[in-house]
Structure formats: C-alpha cells, structure tokens
Image (cartoon, rainbow, N blue to C red; front, side, top):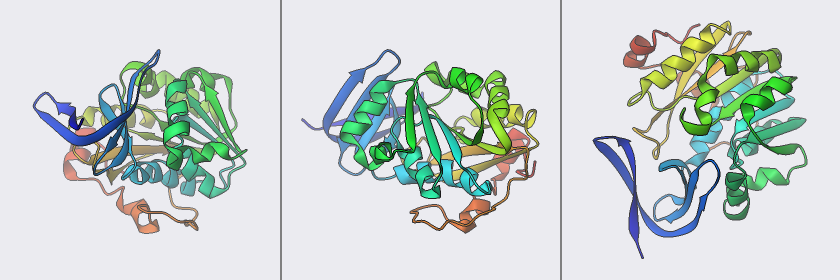
Amino acid sequence: MEYWFYEEHTENVRWGLRIKNEIAHVKSDFQDIHLFETYDFGKTLVIDGTIQTTERDEFIYHEMIVHPPMLTHPSPRKILIIGGGDGGAAREVLKHDPQEVIVVDIDSAVIELSKKHMKFLSKAYSDDRVKIVVGDGIEYVKKHDGFDVIIIDSTDPVGPAEGLFKKEFYDALKKSLNDGGIISQQCGTPFYHPEELKNAYDLLSKIFKFVKPYLAHIPTYPSGMWSFVMASDDELKLRRVPEFETKYFTEELYYSSMSLPKFIKEYCHCNGDK
C-alpha cells in the first residue's frame, strides 16, 4: 500500500516522500531504523524519523564530507570514520588509495542493513583495507591514534551522537591525529539550526589553529543547505587534485563551498579564514 513519509523539519515545516514500500524496519538498542523504497529518491534510510541518506542524492553528502579533508592532506594513509555505518564515506575514502580505513559505528543494525540492501554504499566493506568496529567512537578515539584524517559522519547531536559535538571529544580527536592531521564533521542545516555549526566552529577554534566551515546543497536534508567543518593545525588548502570520478565535488568547489552567506558569517562570527 502506497503512503507518504514526512520528516518534521521544524514544528511548522515538514517535508515528504511518497513511499513504494518499506524494505525493512529495525528497532535497535540505540535507534529506530526504517529503510524505504521511494519513487523519486530510491532506497531511503531513515533513523529516528530523519532521513540519513537516499540512493539518489547520497553522493553529494559523502563526497563533501570526504574529499575536502582528504585532498587537504598531502598523503592520507590511515583514516578513521566515526559513524558512517552505511559505508558511503568509506567508499569515497577508498578513491584516495589509503592503507587503512577504520569505520567505528555504535549500531551494527545500520551496517547490516546497508550490507544487505544498499550495496551501492556498502561495497566498500568488501575491500580488505576497510575494518569495521562496532562500538562507541568517543571511547575508540581515546584509545587509538596515528590517524591522518578523521571523518565524523554522525547523525545530529542528539541521542547516541550528542557526545560527538563536545569539547572533550574534540580534544581527544586532536591527540589521536598525526602531525598535519585533519578532521571533518557534518554540522547540520545552518538555515534552521545554525547553532550546530556555531557550536562546532567555536569549540574547534579553541583547539585547532585552522578551522573552515563549508556548505553543500543536499535536496533531501532539511532546507537543502547543509554545513560541514574542517579543522587542522596545518593550513587548510588544496594540496592534491582529484584524479578519480566524482558526481558533485570538483577542484573549484573546494574553495567555492567555503564562501559563506552573510547570515552564517554573522551568526557564527566566522569569516571562513581562521
């Protein structure tokens, strides 16, 4: 039976997709997970009532959380992905020919659903360089180091992901990075919730010498405007050019995505130059 799924963006705004059928519904120890087949966006992963990724536009999010930090680093060999259990970020990281990619996700249900139903994302898991760890990313970072790039591919800062947006976690990230190491993190929609980006920018600016917010347009995410942030103690600049196939990211977009609208600069007190 056909029906609609609606995501509540604010108490007065919601956005919907018409559903062909429900592929799976899992209530894990951490989250309520639905996987739908939709008419316009293909397979759509929904966690706790919010769209996480869709078959049609996932490439935008995964390319933008991965390629800017990876191309900022001159030679990224050991990569840590916190969250990202669907495998999409790992898929993009592999395009840089790293030696090792570690994916730490707290919820095995997301990993298993992706392996079974979303092979366009989880195909990275068939690569021997990718190691999956089911566990708490915060605790993992405290016990491991030697990373060139750390990618925080989490849900919004509520529930299991809340601790991934706090100073204690960012301090641990810095200690686990090699010299010249870089982190990237998704920071939500600055249109509806600019406080998420501002909080991350403010905290990271106290820990790292260089911090840059940047944007991407993702149709199925609230407002369509989505933010990310990179941080490092080395200058954030393009050190390599992409020599692989992309669908959204370009060399020109590396810098243009860091050109922030005035309302974001004013709210976050950032000009993108730190």
